[in-house]
Amino acid sequence: MKMDFEEFCSEVFESIRGYLPENYRDASVDIQKVTKGNDQILTGIVIRDDDSEIVPVIYLEGFYEEYKLCGEMKRVLQDIVELRLKSEAPSCDISWINDFDQVKDKINCRLINTAMNAEYLSNKPHTLIADLAVVYDVDYSDPKLGQGKVVITTDLMKKRYGVTTEELHEAAMLNLSNSQIVFRSMWDYLMERDPGWMKVDNEAFMLSQADEDLQMYCLTNKEWSYGATAILDSKTMNMISLKMGGNFFILPASVHECFILPFRNAKLGELEDMVRQVNKEVVLPEEQLSDHVYLYDADAKKIVRADKYLDKMKLQAS
Image 1 (cartoon, rainbow, N blue to C red):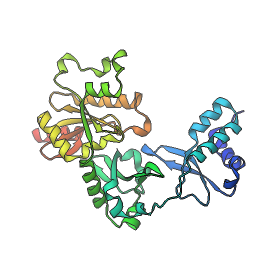
Image 2 (image 1 turned 120 degrees about the vertical axis):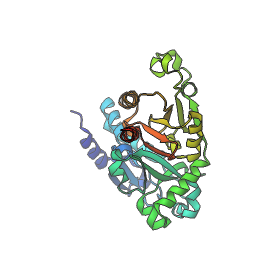
Image 3 (image 1 turned 30 degrees about the horizontal axis):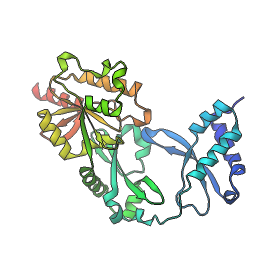
Image 4 (image 1 turned 90 degrees about the horizontal axis):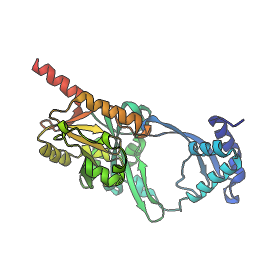
């Protein structure tokens, strides 16, 4: 009988040393629970030798799937060790990561759902935007380490940087304004992301003839990674507002992009149904941003929940 996941992790912990090379025989081995996006909990193994400054977390869920397919624990353990050795970071000076003056022009942000990330946010500085939260990280590019990100925790911000969340946010917004933000029509977005999309049934992507004036757009970044943060750039939002003639809807497609739709004539209930359906059928759980639709209030120059905005308008009209 094959092991369940907890038994599998215990077996990895107990047996992995026997597959490590001689220079790793004194390495420490730990199994850790890691909180990822939308409070998804993953289990990782950390193999740290005395010379390692940066150590990768190797997540075990994928290796468990391998084990269920092949049933060979020896093979799985060998694959884990192979990945660990390939991931070994060369020795280098990383002290600059603790110096705010050296990292402030590398601070970026990500937009996540507040309620769905309660555990994740418990030790991260963040700024609330409606019911979403802005979190921060440092991008690095090193000849030895390659490219990566360091998530800014509350301890890192207070004890190393000596700055406030407001100062972090200000640095991130400045860097965002200097980044390459992508604003495309839905047609151009689909063609750029997948030129072959027209070969399949694309009816779900098309607006009806009656709604053809409600052209939908995609807003993201050039990397198509955590591009939903583009809605935080005031210059971009003002530009879109001018194009749309005022207020506009923001549909959170995922943490990577948002869809933009003019405010006029669109039915909020149908838009909310669309977002919920896409989250349920298309978007990975850890990449979902929200089931709600948002609105850019052009007069107040702020992002609000669309349902709360319309409720407020109804009260003022009554």
